[in-house]
Length: 243
Image 1 (spheres, rainbow, N blue to C red):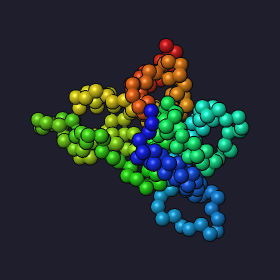
Image 2: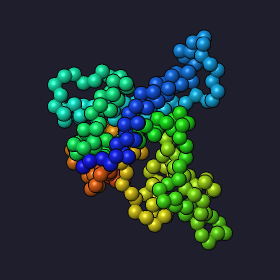
Image 3: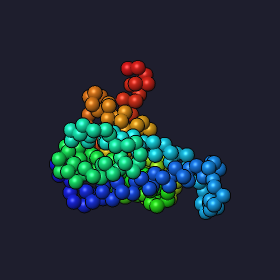
Image 4: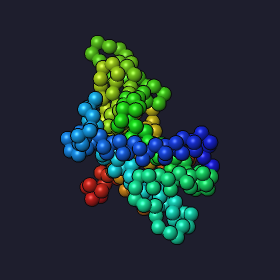
C-alpha cells in the first residue's frame, strides 16, 4: 500500500531531525548529571531532562535498528548494514524511504513508528506540548459528591508517561486503568500503533514484534498495524505467571 504524500513528507522530515534530537537529549542528560561539562558550557536555563528521556532514546534506537535490518533484507542488499550511528542509520532509511513508501507492505507501520519516535524525542526537549487532549476530546466521567453528572473536565494524556488526567478535578488513570476509563466513557478500547502499545507496556518494540511473529498477539486489520493494548497486557501477565 502506497503511503500518502503528506505522511511520506512528514516521515522524511522526521528522519532528518531525529539524529540532532537524539544528540541534544544525550548532551542535556549528561549535563543534568553534572558530568562532562566543559569550561565553555553555558549555565543551564532550564531543569535537566528526566532520566526517562534516555529510556525513550534506547527505545528509539531499537526501532530504527529493527527497520534498518528489515529493509536491508527486504531490498536484498549484500553489503554491511549502515554504521551504528544515529546519522548513518537515519540516512540509510531516508535514502530508501521513497521506494519503501511504495513497495514495502509495512510502510504505514514504519511511518507511524518513526513519527511516534520523533514526537517523543521532541516532547522530551519541550519542543511539543507534554499534555495533549485525547482524540475526540472526551470529558471526565468521574462523579463527585453532590453532583448528578460527571466532572466534565477535558481529559489530557501525558505524551511521555502515558497517564490520562482530568484538567479540572485532576483525576488520573494509568496504563493499567485505560480499560476502566473506556467503560466509564461508554466506548470500546481503541487499538493503538505497535510503538505506542510497547510504550504503554514498557517493553521494547522488538519484543512486541516478536510476540506478533509468534502469533501470541493478533494485530487489528488495516494500516498502520495496530494492536489492542489489553492483549499486550494479558500476554505480559501470562508470561509473568508462567501460564
